[in-house]
Length: 273
Image (cartoon, rainbow, N blue to C red; front, side, top):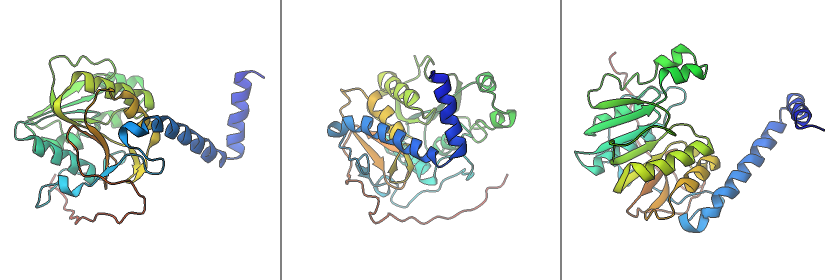
């Protein structure tokens, strides 16, 4: 039987038995987990929970923080993800330089711009997005919150081929572009090769499906992209979807899905348009 015939038969089985998709996804996730666990000794991974977990609360300012803007829109970050970025930029000092891959509505760039000296955000150009057959309404939303801000520079291009010369180094880098294994691996390798100094920290978004639940394909891309000589440590950050590379050690614990959760106070107020 040809590969084409086998593919048609497989698709037919999925149409007749949609529950089989869960079997396929589970098997795929198990393969990515095994790939990631090849790095278990170096980065202290566990099969159950992935990376060691560093808590978010000690990274935040002692009096807490206010996050703005936040749209609660589809495909975005958690509020705690953006609070993490703000906290890391604050720790880098008043002259902090921030770079991110993946702009979307510009919420992360705008949230960080309030506390960073400069922000650079890289996204596919409008023409590249059109070639991907994405609707104009989607394209128009890119940079919605960040475009008006004077200290935000919007770069256009593909992170795989973009010429980073003359841009870095940056104090905080946020990788939130294409979340496929190949893209995460390449973005990670290029960031560590071209955009960092010895004290830089790197954050990856969607390294978890939800807080405490690893996304093994993304973790595999991170781990395979990290240089073998990277001297720091890799963590999952509690209460977020993020992984964090820190050159200095942070307090951490073995991941547990049933650990007592950290709690935060949340206040929501609409911003005036």
